[in-house]
Image (cartoon, rainbow, N blue to C red; front, top):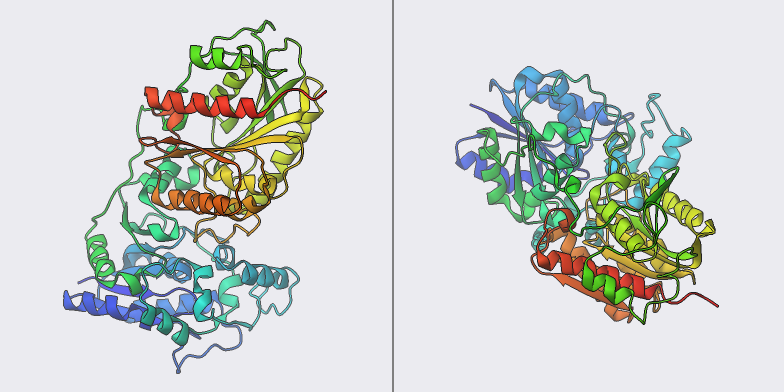
Amino acid sequence: MTAFVLVAGAHTGGWIWDDVAARLRESGARVHPVTLTGMGAPDRPAGPGTDLETHIEDLLRLVDEVDDEQVVLVGHCYGIFPVLGAADRRPERVARIVHMDAGMPGNGDRALALLPDEEVRERLSARTATGVGEGHGEGDGGDRLVPPPLRDEWQRWGSVAGIPSDRLTRLAQDAAPQPAGTLTRPLRLTGAAADLPATGVLCTGNGSSIAMVEGMVAMGDPRFKALAEPRITFFELDTGHWPMLSRADEVAGILLWAAAGEGHRVTASVGELPGHLRPFVLDAPERRRERIGRVDLHLPGGLHGDVHGNLHGDLHDDLHGDDVPDGLSATEGPWPAVVFVHGGPVHPDVRPTPRDWPGFVGYARSVADLGAVGVTVDHRLHDLGDLPRAAEDIAEAVDLVRADPRVDADRVALWFFSVGGLLSADWLAAPPAWLRCVAASYPVLAPMPNWGTVGTRFRPATAVEGAGRLPVVLTRVGRERTEIAATVEEFLAAAKECDAAVEVIDLPEGRHGFETTDHSEAARRAVEEALRSVLRHLGPASE
């Protein structure tokens, strides 16, 4: 018989699994909820040097003691770190690893990097970097204890959606201080468990979903290639970060199915272009393109410099009639510019890079055909923690574009896509006078609850308070992922509260990234309407 070893996340112990364990035992399964050293068991308090290695050794002792031939190791949140460490040393004893709303840490990763609490993360990072209190030469952070959140602070560690009030109260009352070394000591893996069967349980209320996983695999990111292997399965739960408290019955059922090899399998399409590499919805003619570092400029005029328009008739006529703003029909410039900001994260090895994806090339050519410079940028959002660096890349690209004599530096628009929407926050919070418009298509406008490395700086839903009357053109798709749609609604509610100038273009049947996957007339009209609005907001040339 297979036994389940249930490992809790930060500040919690085996008690958090009580209801799940009871359901599993009722089904006839053997269950071992674990309270790791220092996490509340009176016989195993935290001591000098308690760290991640201590917790791995706790699990190894249990795995060696159980009579069952194989075990299913279940790690929630931080708990996946000791789970993976133990599996790496006893792979022959592990039937499956279950990531219960947990990440995919690798060799050398620290649990600290995944903490949703920004204040705790920054404080421990600073002390670890300076070596304060280190005792093992691994940056363990010493013997300090990180206090648990108060009852009203748990949402900073993950979504509390679905947790009944009495259980949230118990979560706060029974939580234990977390030994800092468990968060700061790196996980060391040899790869011995890399090919074990695994299951991801994704809590949509906390920002994860199967659709998101499929999107990452389709993007070609080598970090996620293994997720399409048959040994990997997935389940979704429509709840927050602590499903064992909010959906105990369903969690127990999922664990039994996972142990039997059931679940959704992600498949990598063979011989089929991924969605982001399919043709753009509009027939945008090729324009002169100049490449400067990470920036591409798509310039008005044909390949030989002649200005003419071949874009979809109604749109071109609308923008080149008698009321066309100055600069949108000039043959020599200076022209206004639209800078397109892709989403991510995109691994640096992915080819082609975003500025060569048909969607962004299509948008850039479209605005060039209509008399503005279309700008695409390969910013370096390779991981969620890279948002500050990506923001610097965008700012540098904008400076480069505005310094070009062919560009009217006082007429620039920024257009953000998907997760790139988070990068709009700086521009919304304090828009410069030359920024005539911000656009966003199927954007993420607030960090997901489980995106711990994203600071409060990148929250457009808050930043919009500073936008004043800056025009914002938002393309909203009706078949958006639930977790992303929630951020859009949060943004719109905040925009309404501060009377921001937001125009919403709705595509009821649209999906994330629709411009290259949906060539319907409705999709075409939505893109044309967004283009029309952005270019008109660029306004007349300054005197």
